[in-house]
Image 1 (tube, one colour):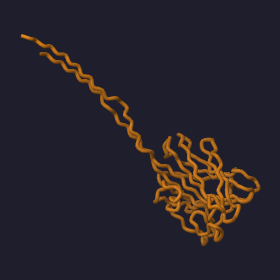
Image 2 (image 1 turned 60 degrees about the vertical axis):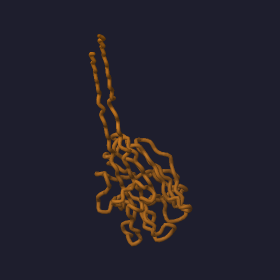
Image 3 (image 1 turned 120 degrees about the vertical axis):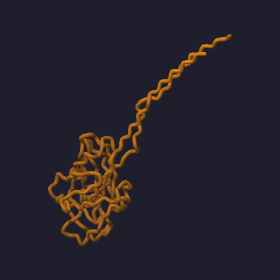
Image 4 (image 1 turned 180 degrees about the horizontal axis):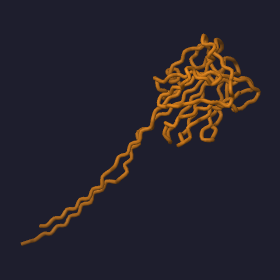
Length: 236
């Protein structure tokens, strides 16, 4: 008996891609009225965004766009900068109203206008470390310290403005959440804000987070087995 066996194997290749996790935190405040400023930590932002890194530093930013200490700190990101289309807004740390001594909400930048729009923007730039395709979340807080001091909010990314969402002072609806998908080479996003009722618009602070997707496992090559039998029998 003669037997021939042929075995062919093509191996598999495993590919893994890891995205980064990042957190940027901002609290707007009045640098000349620190007595009324309630201290803020990352835990205060985690209440409304569980993806906030608990070790992140909160950046204190005044109406002129000045960052306390001069450097913007963020987890997973370097080189973040801020800019705006208005040179200077008013800012305030309140001791009254519904949110006195409430972290994030007891300080804000604001302006008064009869225009109902989102023509003002606060721009965040320099997050090229976030990989293309990752989801980025912006949780934006926007109320003042009195009735009708609430805001229309939106974001603009890659030339596209989101739907406008409106906060409400009386009901305690004080923040809105937006998401966008990171595009390669587009490393800035605008927070658009304005008055909701032709009186005062306020911007209290925000968190910006990106989290890794579950590891991408790709089986690139196939696995195959080919077996050939040739048998000869001789009878005597």
